[in-house]
Image 1: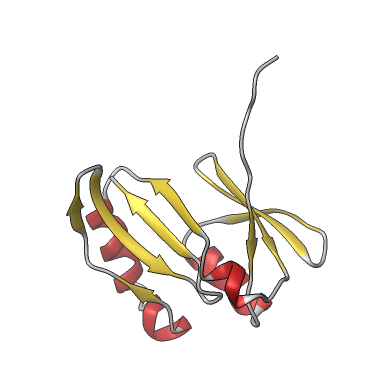
Image 2 (image 1 turned 135 degrees about the horizontal axis):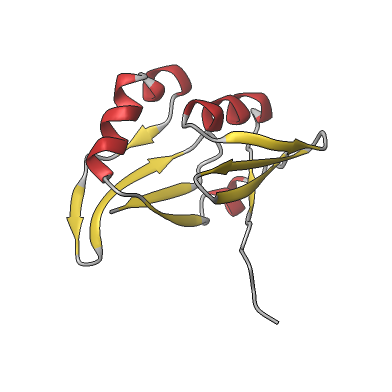
Length: 116
């Protein structure tokens, strides 16, 4: 027996539809939709967006996503003007001890670490 994957449940915050649209704009595709729960996937990375609004949970949740290029990710998000369109926050690519990182704070307040 082996473990095959981890698919965290991510809170949407107040704007479930906006959160769904943000993740689509980030290149994730909907693999299934059960109303208040939506499965997303991109390049084998999966998570479940949950219609759930609890800022204490969201603002204390962090995810690390490995990417081939943090700079390309940063450029991709900015060229699509996602911070302006969705009101999200994002840092410039920054060298950390574990790699180059871009932090993105989604609509709910979850911190996504995109790490090269």
